[in-house]
Image (cartoon, rainbow, N blue to C red; front, side, top):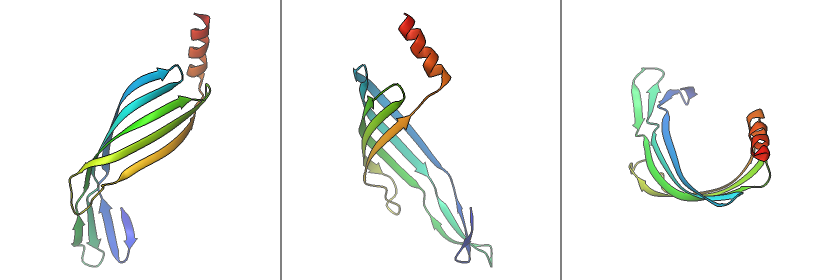
Length: 124
């Protein structure tokens, strides 16, 4: 909710996003995955502060994306992900989400469970 937008109040519904990944190990430290994402929601109402009535409504978003990810385990804590996704279906002409998403992600992780798991694997 935005109470101060050019004399209006904006109320927006949340987005529902679902991701799924079908993953295959290439080596002990690398994988490839087929990725699917579904996005829906975010409809917006613009409400006049003076009258309290809805001035404008904007339909929500809907999109389906398909892509792939390459993942590399650089060391026990550092991972590199290369991701590319492409929209193959967008359900609302007024709010088009058609496009391409490419990203590079570095992920650092460390926690007690990971260390205990590594120690267990090395002992067996």
